[in-house]
Amino acid sequence: MDIFGILTFIGGLAMFLYGMSSMGDGLTKLSGGKLEHLLEKLTSNRLMAVLLGAGVTAVIQSSSATTVMVVGFVNSGIMKLSQAVGIIMGANIGTTITSWILSLTGIESSNVFIKMLNPSSFSPILAIIGVFLLMMSKNDKTKNIGTLLTGFSILMFGMSTMSSAVSPLADVPEFTGILTKFSMPLLGVLAGAFLTAVIQSSSASIGILQALCATGSVSYAVAIPIIMGQNIGTCITALLSSIGTTRNAKRTAMVHLYFNVIGTLVFLVLFYGITSFVHLPFLSEAANAAGIAIIHSGFNIFATLVLLPFGNGLVSLAKLTIPDGPEEKADEACQMLDRRFLDSPAFALTQCKHAAAAMADLTEQGLYKCISLLNSYSSQTAEEVETLESRVDHYEDALGTYLVQLSSKKLSRKDSQTLSMILHCIGDFERISDHTVNVMQAAKEMHEKSLHFSDDAAEELSIYGKAVEDIVTMSFQVFKDEDLPKSKQVEPLEQVIDGLNAQIKNNHIQRLQNGKCTIELGFILSDVMTDFERVSDHCSNIAACVSQVQNGGFDTHEYLRTMKSGTDIQFEKEYQALTEKYRLPS
Image 1 (spheres, rainbow, N blue to C red):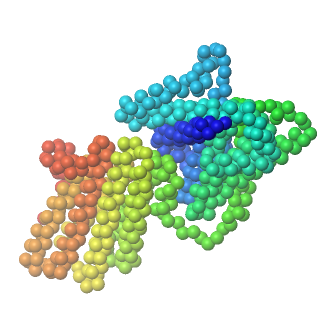
Image 2: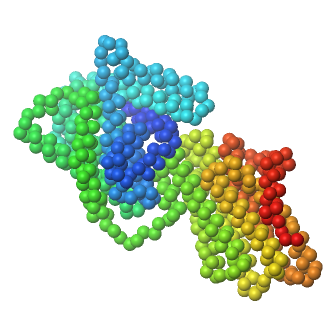
């Protein structure tokens, strides 16, 4: 094998890895984050978790990706360590589907129908269809299908190129001599583990082994320990991913490692124990791609059947390795926004939505508390308002950073619009939270100076405050549910609040003229009213933002101009009804 043969093999390997990545990306985007939600929800039954882990991994073509996702779930508190065990076992079974797909390259027959089952026969057709869909379609789903088909074709072409590049090695005695040494169990396991740890994909390393079978020099005695080692080497991805996580997340990665190491040891002891008494002729035979797939699946199914009843034992072993320590203080925002989820953008975006909804809840709590302070001041409630505002600020920082990172990932057009919507809305949430602190400080000033609004001013402010509470509740619900019909109810209430603001200011001037109010109280009232009005403006922005994303646009100014133009009959109806509801006493 000369330098050109080596370059051909490397090129084939590059295409193989790229094809596998593209195919996984296409499948993941088609799922739209649904697979990750299944992992999150359906894991209470361990057998179901095994089946689910196998199914999800078979679809996304990567046990490493599944295991890293599970580490993220445990780190985020979404999933318990005991729930993760079954998924990890199932992921090892699911990853074997790739070796079965690659084994189709060994199909040979003169029958045209059987020959068409060979990927070298049908993958060019899939490539043409995939490229056509990518170039001609504007639909995200169709493009994802095109990515999937093209990725599969590149994967198969890379596999074929690797096999062709290594076939001349069949006539090189030195190559055969090197492979013979790997029939020693320990050396074979180490070689398989090292190769997989370097490329961080057991599916890819199995594919390389299947390609080497084209030389006819890889016997089953050589292949078996290498396959065992490949299962251990794939643990490196989860172990690296667990760095800097919670104890339970680290334990999840250790469960993955212990499952593969113990499974390998049990299998090797039993297998080589049997071969020491019983001669197995097939061990000296040349392995083929289908045989590799059978061994790969057989081992992982065997390991799962043996260790599934001892799942709690694996958890205990992981806890012994990483013992309990001081209580870890959870960061509620960062828990939801685990960086491991960025490898599954659709799911990561869903987590951002959950985090933004939690941020909205904190903001809403702060608003209710600050309004209550105007009627009955409490230093404890005032401190709670400040604490809530601090937590909201933290959410905005964490979400903003995470969303920027997520924006660099491959997102569908709809997901990109949703990301922009969340980014805009969290700014409004944070500004509303700032206004709650302003209102709290106004209430504090009144308390410290023993100031009180007149009965008329207090009643007007109560009505105004109720309208503000209602618009906040409504707009935040619009954001959480992406409720388009309800979003159209926000702007009429914002207009009513603007009218209330003008009326109360006029009434305040009259009270000043009649000596029923002081200038000092007037300044405080004006500040509170300004904050309330600003809050309603931000609520209007939120509703407009959600509505525009739902309609596929993002021009909020045009949307608000159209709503207020007077040509919307529904708007006028809502406005009149709300004017009556929040009418000030005469």
